[in-house]
Length: 385
Image 1 (tube, rainbow, N blue to C red):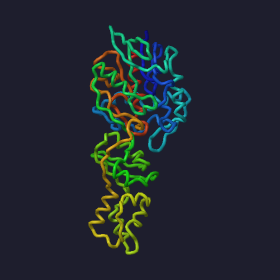
Image 2 (image 1 turned 180 degrees about the horizontal axis):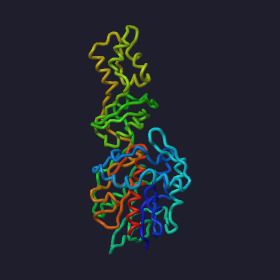
Image 3 (image 1 turned 60 degrees about the vertical axis):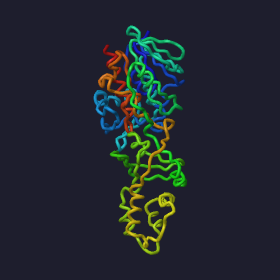
Image 4 (image 1 turned 180 degrees about the vertical axis):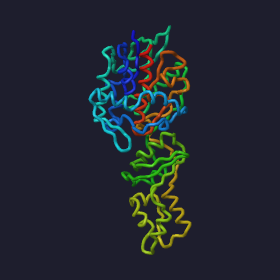
């Protein structure tokens, strides 16, 4: 019999456990090691927060849900935690904060676990029931009991690291609705004619501006062997882009029409002029067989070229999917979750934290910030009982 059972030994689960001093805590983790996804974060450096954080950096059906938790546990609070465990960190000009290593953060979380906490690895969650105010949790072929249950199982993104949709099944079993999940902070896979057209552009990277509907982001864009990747696209993917029209300005600082008119001369083909701005392989792919003397271009052709380079559009038919997505957007609806405590409004003593909830942050430390804040909110409420 435990005071608290925490499902998942990731960032949110471990941080929640670390704040439950003197509580008898059991952490159940399906992987053979804790914190695998945390170790992979930030390229091994752990982008653990963003100094410019706002609730507007999160995507949710209820965009204001995260305000309370984020206000109660701020950057300075997590800095204190890192300093207590001698983890060095730096803040970059863009507001991103990185630790000396992801391993250092994981080691700090493990070191902060109370002596009353127990962890069972390779103990995969199966199901949970509540009988007479006690949760009965089946995992790894055994049954464990506790007065409180915290689900910190995350979403299905990166199944190679043990991710699954188990949190959704648990939530549904207790009557909670699920906002349709989708892979986010991920790339696009080209198919059909687009795949053939851009077959020779792998490795090209540049600053671009991407938009889908009302959402627009500027930043790095990378052409891969099978499509597109990079920070600008990752940010856009947070808002659900599959099946929607994507527009890319491949020269956001240049008016292509004006550039062509200024550089027209009889000796140069249009491809040669545009190669002064963009990589030759990319220009060739965009022109798609069209080329002529720049002096022979008419007004309509210049306008079409400007549209092609300043607003190239296509439909995102296929994404890189959960296998490569950094997070899962959507998830457990927050309408029946307390924004102050992360406790279910349907079942007393049941909490949900981190990525499994319908709160998804942009690229740049926002999702770990939510993991810390939601975990702290749940732990505070449990500790007060």
